[in-house]
Image 1: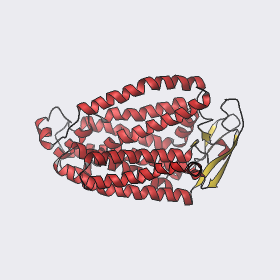
Image 2: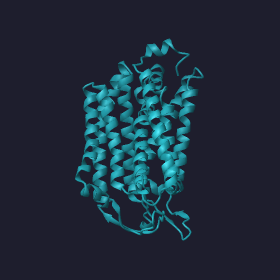
Image 3: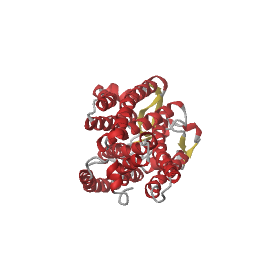
Image 4: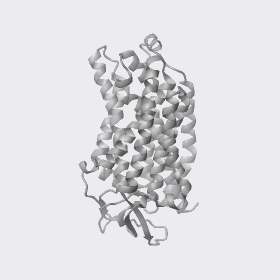
Length: 378
């Protein structure tokens, strides 16, 4: 397996990790974000919390693994992203810190005010990261203001507030709503009674809203956001030379790959259809279909972004020639090969024990079960 093949494989694998994160961690973040909306009393909120309690920390592994893989496979991208998005990353981390604290401390004191504060912490700790992840992708599609000097030292020339531009906020709202919708479809699989009915109603609306926002984002990207295009690359005999290429910013460039391979249009189409199917399945009370459709739609959104940007990973709006692509921002061939072998061994193991965990913890929860197991459940 040559270096170029390994570079492409790791582009695919990091995409798989991101898809795994939005599907697996997406539903527990979505449930937590709905805690104060769907849950109307303490017992109902405990049902929601315990629906995700066996899995939320395991699901978090997808995010940790994606961050680790980004650091090892694309160290330059890791450095540039954590430099440019530093404040946003710290805000995300501090929000995520609230989640384990809220799970553990919420029921330690028998006080409605105490529980309510932790409920809000759990809601914020789930909704804020979902919003920021979408904002980050929205900014990547517009280009990030960074460049390298003659010693390849990176400089970021943007600001935190510049990240909150209209297109990025649209992407953030889409990210938040599709994760909340995913949480609502998961509640349909795990709950009964009023919680189930409210989740069906929410998903039947949010699924359609996500479809509309996804189409709107695509149209905005086509008509109002310039893309990036690689014009030429200097042959460096397999050595990473980040700045040795020619890149232009052009209208519609993010749609070049779809023009070259028209079958790729099936990916965003499946995303739209997945959101619509999720809404219809929720209305028809086809709960498993609603969850599967939501998962497919979220996966298609991530894949659509990847296809649109390929081969770019982090384009530079300041100096386009310094944009980072999957061909020039990777680690060494040896590193990629070792990581590939490790991934071949451990990713199937992770998937296997995750599937086993979901199988063991299958079934629905209700308020009576919560009351009967007050001291053994959250």
